[in-house]
Length: 597
Image (cartoon, rainbow, N blue to C red; front, side, top):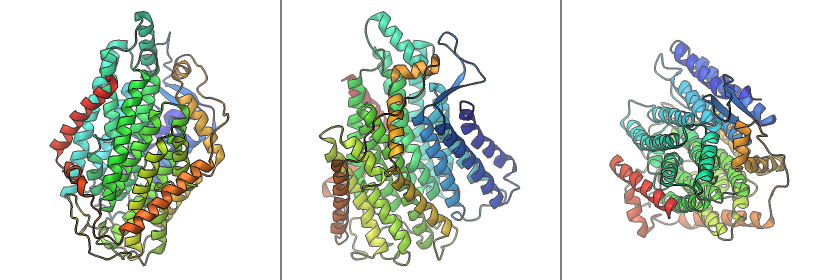
């Protein structure tokens, strides 16, 4: 299995290299077939690795000597491999969806988009598997740079370029913060491997007789900042809605389906491997930081989601809200919290990508993603409407979707969590159902919206197929249906929950990770008892879904979705890069305060 780990990253890189070299001369079907094969091969390798025992691969056989190594290490634990498999499968779905989505690229550029998608896949898979802080930074930046290029793919238009610049500017600031934090850790320990850094910090703390000092806390704040920027957590989230509003729909499927979740995964990974020991940051500080930002992200994201009429921005803000729920689950710092969050992420990836896929169909049929402008225009595509409604119910946590199961497992960890999870799930799911009712059923009255806010509405968009399609292409609808089916399967397969629970046990074992990487110890845990659906969890899922339906039914007849007291919050999302930079700097201060308080 160890030999498969490098191939999961290398295969999409080779596919991208082939497309860069030969894509100029290859017709579009050939280029997309090559990309699909490379992405599918990487997905198959990740699934095959998951089927075997967890392992560690030192590239070039540069194994550690006496606990020290300069080699590149890839760690095939279950959580990392599962995320790599999810990424690769979603990339395959996106490439299949794009087969009929984009208009014909200019002559000589048939391989550009699939090559960029493969590079994006390689960056995400590498980040999920690496056991080295600097390599994680490199993969993270590869992911980011390709993300900027994909967002501004339609470089001849001004708005995508502006969105890409906002994306690039804010995420670059996060990258600088992360690199500075890694530099501080290297200065303290002389190591870059996560396991080595964690062990060195613990040994230094044991020798000095005290825990973390100011340098270690500063490194934690800086590294965490970069990861939270990528996760689009409040107040680092401003770039995400602006990017989704202008990025091609297949790119939105990747950004919200898996890239944002990589930020949350990175925060959890760095905490457990580097800072969770006696030489790291006290658990109370890390828990407080993640919890405050998680709750703030969930509430702000839900409130902003409800007030959008631009469907892509609405879905983007729902991603911010669910990122907040993910961070809240991670903040518990327990295996059960991580297991529930992992299942939530799996279910959310399928549901959110399917919703964007349905939105892309609307865009290509009607040239708009404005909820008001689309009123009643989806009546002739009932199956797409059914998929859209199912996606909204999945976001609301309806059993047995995987989102509902993950939500239920996290909710049961604390008595106050159900209130937050039910509220946020109901509001975000209700916003999606409201759009579905108005667009696909024609509910309410057209043109009654009188709450024009500072955000773009999404009208007068150009179809990304080059011309409006008369009927939804079969591949696009099929991909949306399969993604929702996958989200449903996550909540109906008990064996998956058992495997995720065992993986979460190993993921949160700080000393066990170092022993597996540096000493050749076991990298996994045998499966044991695990939580499954309970009557309470299923009941809370039904409650949030019922509230979502009620909110949607109540709102379709109203002339305004605006919440009057939220006007200042809406104005903060100004679209000005300078404002977002200021909020990023303020966020670093907030994270510092929470970590030290």
